[in-house]
Image 1: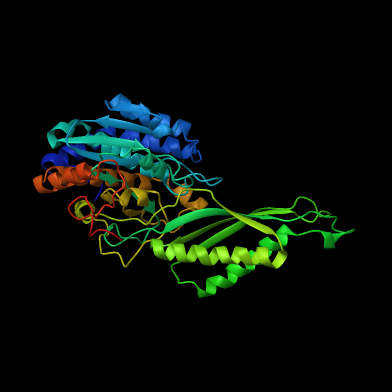
Image 2: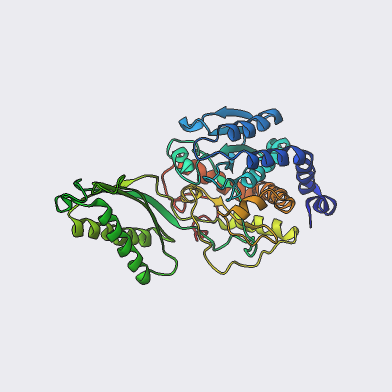
Length: 419
């Protein structure tokens, strides 16, 4: 069932939200298409952030640019109710392959949902924030914004993420992996590779030993653990023993204890390279730690019921989904929703050139507007329920400046909604 079919079959506030969404459909689809055609990398999303913020300002939102000291972040606010709702807007792309993670669709869905809700913020008693969050792919924009207070006072946070076909829209029980990204730097001694190779200490050899050790380690790792690495520097001339080598690597696991244990095992592989070659080794953290994702059960219930109305697959998911997102850090302290949305007929995995192309297809845009309607209905469902409204608003007040775990003081089901 498409959006216009939902308009005909719905009533009351749901129908009004869908009608308002339909009014903005050409502008938002043009926005999403424009983002897709002009991809920008993490922290450099100048044109994308400006375009989204400009549309929200035109509609009547009060827009603050450069939120949390990040030039490509923004906060668009409407209403003054006790319950503060955040719709997260992502718009960064990937190097060389553009919007192969569908962030143009994420931006479109959150923006459209915000526009649909705008005329009803006072009736619902909410403060609505569309928060432009740069650098999800690399850099952890949401983590920096969380630490700097951009999400203080927020009672619930929502966004959606497109994926290939075959995923249920039901987010209950799904999660994402913790991920940390690091740099291993080996330092040796240069020497002439022909005249005096024995005088050198070969940093490139240390990187080779480490890669072999990591490759062998994978046989002993649980199936849901991930280690990725590539050598970014390992010599510049064949007649010089390399005195410096750099390996970029990341580790992923579904829980923080598993992640910490995995990281130490991988670090030992790099230490083996240093020991075998006599090089010095230093580790550098290159990005904030992305934490596992927690799906709030109350929000998941509203969302799943809404997507069921569109005829989407809402069967219970078989287990954790995978991947990683800085939305995980938000979800650890704020009741959050981050469902996976299958684009019908798309078999290509995310982060592929084929998926990037299909993120600009008619089917992808239809799904984007369905997701926007479901986001708006989810917010309206919570705000229209006095008990849920009070619980989410009280949770935000109790958290104050963010830092307490979500199950210490959160919405009605935050303690039960972890993946």
